[in-house]
Image (cartoon, rainbow, N blue to C red; front, side):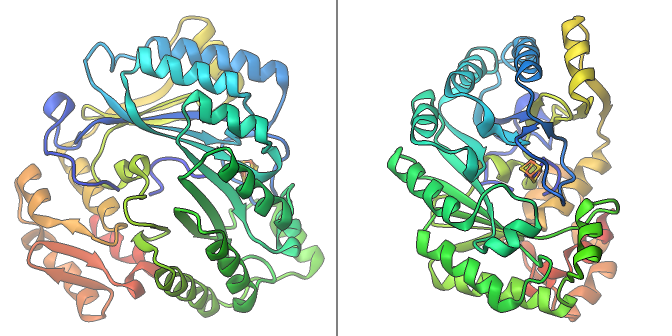
Length: 400
Ligand code: SF4
């Protein structure tokens, strides 16, 4: 489950809290829940195995950290809240409800805010999801990853494809009318035909939003060992590109609009929260390892659950590092992350906010990508083509 900085927004008005160029529109709030029932063999996120006592102490610390939120004092409103992890659906509805209530009182979470909670299919029950709805959760992000049991088993996931389909039905029955499904492609032993099966299953369920990622194998991932032992291989890179194209084509044919490299949605169902990461927005994260970007500063809490709890319990800040962003950093972040959006970068808007001519500064380095068909340069827009999205990191290097 993905953390901020990996990766955009409607167009909030320029200027915002503190008048910083990078703080546009209302804040997003992020709460990190670092517990999972088991650890998947490819996972490089900040998480650990669920322990009831540790969860209690962690939630206590999280409430304490929220209590100290300074954004409320500054009168800044938040229009999104995202429970990420880890597996936030290991929380009871009462625990989720208490955190939402505190975000309303301590961090000015607006009454119409988008409130997303990430859930894994095996944790889902009618009581739990009904409780989340009553607590105010408006959007559910289901970590399905694949609709094939052999692929789920190779990834060490706890659920089956049938359980994922059941979880989706339970979510609909509980009243969720805004559901996102995560899928992963380029899995060990996955063929393009296998991948299409998962995409077709997803289209059949008709969620409002889809996230589709390429599996990234970090250096010491246990999955790497399992792949060598099992003789499992990933398809060649050009097949991975085929998987990406086929997914975008099929989703577009089914009425979804791709709005970011790895995200597509029905009209009006883009993720308000995640858009902030890609469109020069501001957000404040709470919990271990959580990132924040607000009022010209960027900071990150200590990653360890124990360290985080000890610091907060001792009345100290859990922030591990904090720095003021230079104007240059804010500008390059804005361009780098904005390129992830299908609409690309609003060049005129960036030039207004940061006071420079983007093409004069980077045109010579960007022109070869335009000539190669990876980038489109329109009068006031700079955007990646579909082919460019697959090679986005190469284009983005220009701004680093
Ligand atoms: S459920 Fe998500 S966060 Fe937890 S181990 Fe698996 S991939 Fe990682």
